Figure 1 (cartoon, protein in one colour):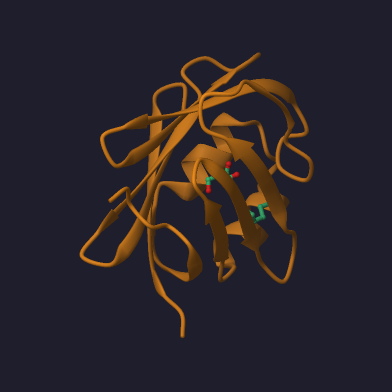
Figure 2: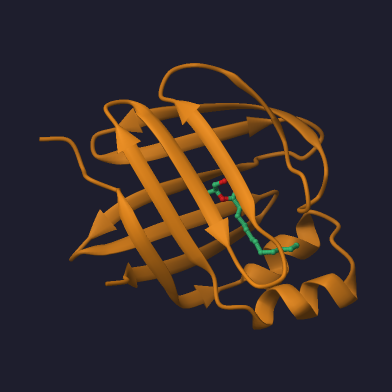
Length: 135
Ligand code: VLZ
């Protein structure tokens, strides 16, 4: 059985999120708002087809993708860049590489003890977020 990411998840802990936003050149004021927010991930999964919605009171971000298929992603409301994203499986972990202006950019999602983990990487910064299930 592949990992089941689907459901509603609420942010519980966040490490180095501001540093990550800074690496993306997001301005000071926006960063201060962004780090104060509660974030909810709403994930739908149908085989290798995924939809990740990151919801907050300030901005939302949505990404729909199919594992193994390169996608033109525009990071609207984040750093507003065009990137080429590819998500693949590494065992039960979803691994996304985001090719573009920023070096070493990507993310990983996995589930551990019924928590949703996310690592967001840009350049030398690794942000780690943990989400718990929202009933
Ligand atoms: O997440 O690529 O789950 O796309 C922050 C929204 C969302 C809050 C960050 C407002 C999600 C921030 C980054 C304003 C600057 C991301 C993927 C993995 C799905």
